[in-house]
Image 1 (cartoon, protein in one colour):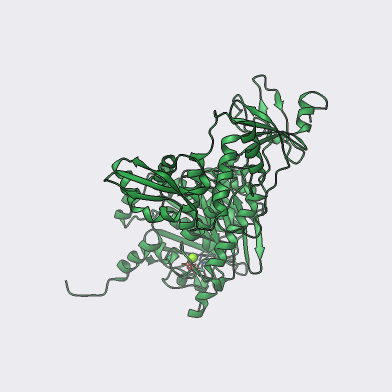
Image 2: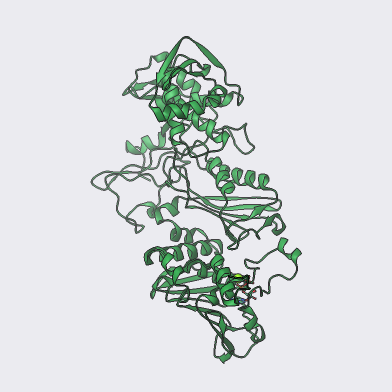
Length: 591
Ligand code: ADP
Ligand code: MG
């Protein structure tokens, strides 16, 4: 075939392919146009998962009659005029491509009426061909009707997922915009069912429940921080509430949903050691920075952006999240528990804890009734540790001086503090102590202790291969390990801070970590490795400790920076306040 220019319809279908991938992409573009038009109310109607109909109406400023035909032309926009504008974009759109793209792959009807115009004007486009404009009765604002999406691109239709999936994508997308723009009223109907409705009150928390479940939404912690021209706000989950995937980590930058691996990494770093391996937090974070500090013209759907001062942004994000987590890490008290007879056995613990209110009681809040016991409304909230040198805003968490009473069940230490009784999990506590000893060393300068007798360790083939690849990393961590045969290793030295512990157990923990590896950042990886070794080497439940050992453990825990949780985020201690005891013994009224 000789080289020739493609007919315009073909060219625009190719271009449309970049922006309009599925029904949810249409919804995204139309919502963004409505937001750019200053709408206070956006109504979205969907039929058959968007294949039959997508209609988005708004009460924004509308399109004047004489600009209507231009609105559906490619590269026609009212939001940008010169190249320099690209670096100070304050609108969601600017490429002038959405309406043209949608019009080339569907039957599009655009009806609009600016306030000063007596009637509405209507323009139809079918498969990229525009029909003459007509006057029609219409409210002020714009309505875009998209029928039979991809009717002329059957191949695209075949790539769509099942209707339930496409419907879910539309709902999730709409909920995200609703959360990002809480002062705008959103209304979403799918097949004549109201799926989502927001009040436009500006209150984000009420919208959270549309994105996550109600119980999760209630536990989310607020993040709010701003410094000069940069602000971070939104919600994050407490470390006890996690997912096995990253999909619920949502970021908006200047009102625009953004996928950014570095933002996600900064978030994860803030949770550092609070989450178990393979678990991810839930977050909806809204970052605001000067428009010239972000390049949004990187990706056709604008899902990716570039930051001018990325390090500062990530640092701020991390600190903001960190602060929210720290603010929320009391020593967990025993809070609620319900007996079979539906009678509270324990009431709220220390006076600093939030007392459960009637609304917190499952059953009265429209939540499923609890089984035998109900987790406290705010679960044991772990504190945090940091593998990096102390950061500003990362206050040391003190525990009061404790007087040891003894050990019970070979697993818990019992101690008295100024306000009641403390139960300490000896394993979790020891993990924390070991971990902080590790952190106290300079990275890369972990002191090694030579073993009198080298110890051998044999590993399965794949694990041995992994370990072989990571031997240099190990020497940085205070291990001296050599390959000694295809699957056998010789341990000559291991980190001094672990004292007399079993070196093979430590090395096995390391290998386990390599096996689960999810390509973390270097700093993250070392701390995670350390946490895992500490866990493996810490005293176990079931181990009898001498009174001397008990006392030492307690003192070492008191000296920790973050004594209230183990490096994996589980609590090291539970507090039974005098107040709680008095209530339980009937010395005071119930609540
Ligand atoms: P872009 O949003 O990138 O400018 P679009 O193709 O999405 O490109 O829209 C083209 C133009 O049509 C916009 O610049 C805007 O002027 C106008 N427009 C589109 N949708 C609306 C709307 N809902 N309300 C007012 N004007 C709109
Ligand atoms: Mg647009």
